[in-house]
Image (cartoon, rainbow, N blue to C red; front, side):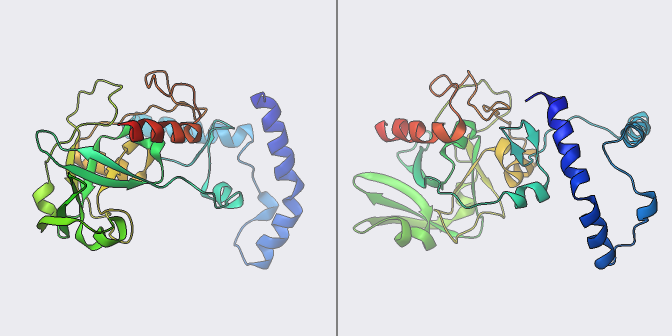
Length: 262
């Protein structure tokens, strides 16, 4: 849909409910001057915003960076929290456990995720410093995960080889699952993060800064790179040759297939 056509529909939608909005505003006691109301889509308002931005720019208070936001790939636009709440519904996502092979060690980090498509943009793994972790032997391979979650994730029989605090894992390096881009910043190692929860999963969180607020903040703190392999229409970019052109949710089963084959 052409942008100008979309905007005309949006304006009609806004004006359609203006009387209801005024009644609601008065009823709940908002202190607003409805006799001198304004619309953010008018040229006067837009010009004012641009003027304010120019003043901020002149004071060298603007910078270019990245921010994780809610986004609609169909419309190709960001969404406000209000818009997200309006169309919210629960959907089923694949829940998978993924092994990350330690570099130069015969063991694997066990990670749980419900968004396999974000694994293409993984740059680190995060653990909780003060929690207990275990290395176990199961079916002739070694796995590392949180002790508290062991019996929920792994069925017996298994052998606990050692128990240790999360801080022991900090800095440990692992082999990336996918390696589609060349990176300048150091990555593919374990970091600490206070948002790592032991309520579900394995106690080891896969970090993809391009797709999570906590992940992005952690990347800034630790100097991690940002890998963005999804375009504005929600499709995997050409760099990820095995999944190029697939919508992210269409890529999920294909990514899972490749991981199983490994």
